[in-house]
Image (spheres, rainbow, N blue to C red):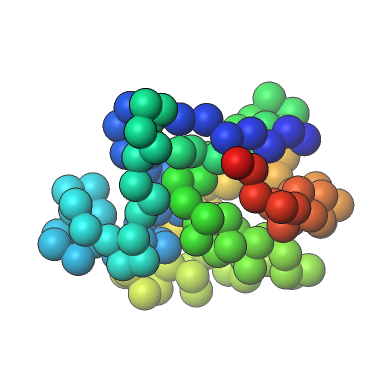
Length: 123
């Protein structure tokens, strides 16, 4: 499992973005202001995006808040139901957990993932 920080010219939108960052001035896919705020671009590099690679699959995070949210959900011994998690947005089958590939779901893999996500943040 490998964690790395990359940069993109456009603001990244990960599967967790709509569940963590609420659009203040519109829906998250059109919003320019978010609560909590999205990270600003790094001059000369672009917008930060954290990538975790494991067995040919990649998880993408657009902010530290998204990483904290993933740690909260994936760190639970028994995963919560995506149906329950999606009720807030009336999108019971489109929560990021219901779309998470099965390679990420075993408890041992999630323990390793959470441990790596809790490690000191990348520069």
